[in-house]
Length: 113
Length: 154
Image (cartoon, rainbow over all chains, first blue to last red; front, side, top):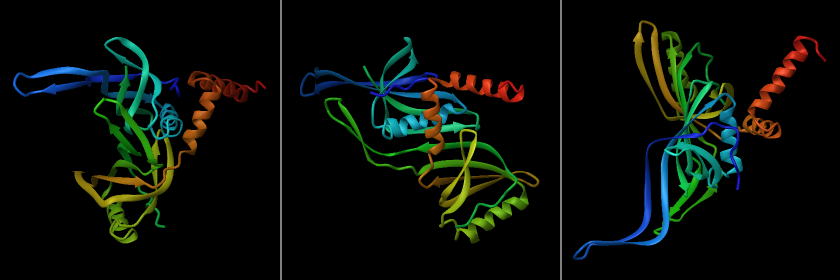
């Protein structure tokens, strides 16, 4: 599995969605039970890059991770401070805002934990 | 192919979106899968230019006459990072917006779709950084080269 090195961490914004695998019934009294221990965690994140860190990041995502379809090891900052984990960019899609020297990359990531 | 006119402009903002042809499946069991359908490098760039009245007229005549009311592709510069690249682009929907700022100052906003964006520079940068194990080592090499050349320290 590829590892993304040498870049500052993702900053998780103030929202992420956690969707566990549950079965819920509503006939009569509502009930729900876990179908499995799987869960899907999607977070809105941004990353501030400087100069040539942007083309380095773009080549990694688009070639090493095959247009963002592959998961990779990366680290991100959340309530647990810096965390290393396996993530994947949702749909391989991201946006870049830049003043030509400083760049902000935004996307959704799927965190596998 | 027409070439974007040489306008005297300053970019006030620059952004782009990358949306590859990826098919994502989310299963009821919360397992997910992503696969690439085909390699797509047609990235959308949002551009904002500040122009004089004369340059605005040049821009509008270029869109109307040179690229057939915005329908044809043309060669134009665009920026990723701080290096200018040149490529074949489309003016998305042939559309742009113009805002009056002050006498002889106009803001023009439009989107261009870069056709098959060239990633050669990104590939070269990635290989250099990987070979030297990090950006700090790349900077150190450049500092050493600068010292060698400027101080004749061969």
